[in-house]
Image (tube, rainbow, N blue to C red):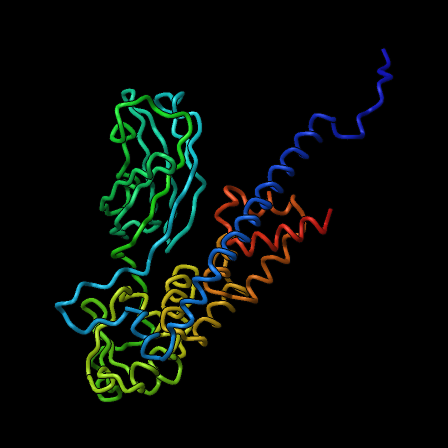
Length: 371
């Protein structure tokens, strides 16, 4: 029997409707972020004006940086390695044993991170999972769990992430109150990295005591001493120029302690500053962090060139780094790939609220113009 039915040449209406619905959801999220951006700009304007009035001199600027500490009796400076994981878990009141819904995976400081929910013995737990990627690498952290909307319940703990465990620390929802498990819960975890160990990378240049005869200052990071030249650092960094040549007491000292940074990453930073090519996908974020902290444009630019031309990092990670460290060329390259809502869905999966507000505003405008 001959089949006289005509072949389908158009997508089914229900499929087209679903796709349009998805696009509408993405567009609404972008509009929400854009609206929040405008509110932030308005509410922060007065604060920015007040802050600008206080920046009367270089001395004030340096004192506000609060990075330098030469008195061993002083409290240790706060780590600059921080990030926030945030995710809304839905239908937790229906969560079953062996189910483990999770957030998307985020990369921060050479490790992959996500939040997970699980149910054991009738209790629901929220865990943070960290994959150190390298078998002998460990990450010591301080974790601050916060439940949004439940009186901002907070729990602080310390944990060391290492293979093969991955996740270990958790938040038991029964700790909050003796009430039934809520349907939907938004969890936010602030992660502060205190120390990273086990990262083996061959040194491209030495800054140990063998360099003593060609150095005039020792910079101490934790227990590691770096023999360097004041004038060379001052010529490349406004921070060190102010520190060494600005008339402060540190300019006369032969040894200065730098706090809040990692010794291995400072090694990589100095290698780049002294002309070595120490930038790769494993080191680039840490180098950028220190280059930004010490205002060293030449190092920042080299990192940006690597991200533009050689890096294999995911698109959303490059976009995040471009916003965080104000990498204009990289941001332009990333945004050039986004012209439609389909591009947003493909390149930026997950929670769009994590986008930098100004980036979200730009993406929204491009999507609107393309319609």
